[in-house]
Length: 385
Image (tube, rainbow, N blue to C red; front, side):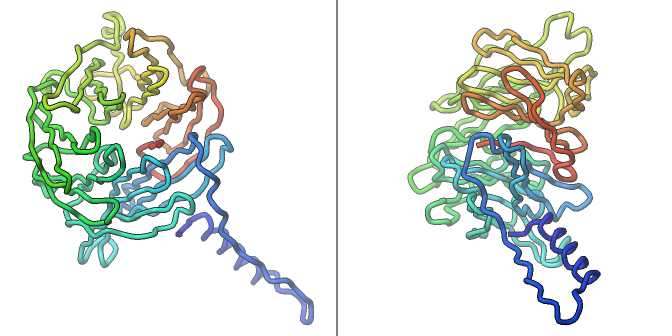
C-alpha cells in the first residue's frame, strides 16, 4: 500500500541517520519500520475522495476516523476515480484509468479491489477504456443493494454503463444508456440514469447481468428553469433530489414505472427573496433513521450553485419543515463544499472546506468536534458506508 505520509517519514528518517552516524564501534539497534493495521470498522469512518486538478493522474481516497479523530490511511485512485464501498464495509472498489507514461501513452481502465482491513489492493478487473473521467460523484461507480453487481458509468462522449459481477470479478456486459448518465441503483437488479431532458432511464437486469428491459420516465426535473443537483441522497428506495433554486423532489425507481413525490420548497418567500439557495459539489446529506435532510446553503444568484455553504439547514423530511439552522462562522468554520452524515444512532456530520479541511460536527446539535487541516489537496467528495 502506498502511503505518502509513511514515505515522507521514511525519507526524513533516512536523512536523519546520515547526519547522525554513530561513532566507530558503537552498537546501534537497527530501526524497524512497520505498517499499522487499520482499526476495526466503525460507522464514523469517512472516505474522502481527493482529485487534484494540478495532478489529475494521482488521485487518492483518504480514510479518516471520526471517533479517534485520526487519519487512518489512504487508497490510491489513479486518474479521476469512481469509488464505491460494499454493503458489508469490507471491500472498496476504485474504477479508474492509468496511462503507460503517466499522463499519456497506452490507456488501461480497471476496477481495483481494496481490502478495507488493510487498504491493500487485492485484485483488479480490466474494464472497457470508457470510464467517465469527471469530478467525483457518488453515482459514477455504484453497487447493487446486495453488492453483487458493480455499475461503472462511461462517457466517450457516448454514454453507457459497464456491469461487473463482483463474485466472479468479470465484466458481464455494457449497457447503452442513450445519452443518459450515471447509475442510481435500486434493489439488486436495476439502475437508473439521468437524462438531459429531465427524464430518467431505468434499466432492469436479468440473472446474468444483461439488460432485460428499460423504461423512460416522464420529465420530473425542469432542466431549463430549475435544474437539479446530480448528488441526490437516498431514503430506502427513494432518491431525494435538490434543485438549484431550493426545491426538493423524490424519485422511486424500484417499480416497473417510476413514481415521483410532490415537490416542496426549502425556502420561505422571504428567504428566497434574500437569495438563499443550496450550493457546493455535494450539497446534501441524509440521516434515514432520523428523517433528517442536511443542506449546505449560501446567499447567491443564478449560476452560484457551486458556491460552498455558509450555513447548514436541517429539515424533517416527514413534516417537510426546517428544524435547525447552523451558522458555520459562529464556530469559526469556513464554508463547506461537500457534506455527509454517518448512518448510526449517534451520527456525526462531516464537511469539506474549499481548502480541504475536514470538519467534524455533532449531527444532532451542530457542535464542532474536530477540524483536520488540509486532508489532501483538492478534496471533493465525502463517502460514508
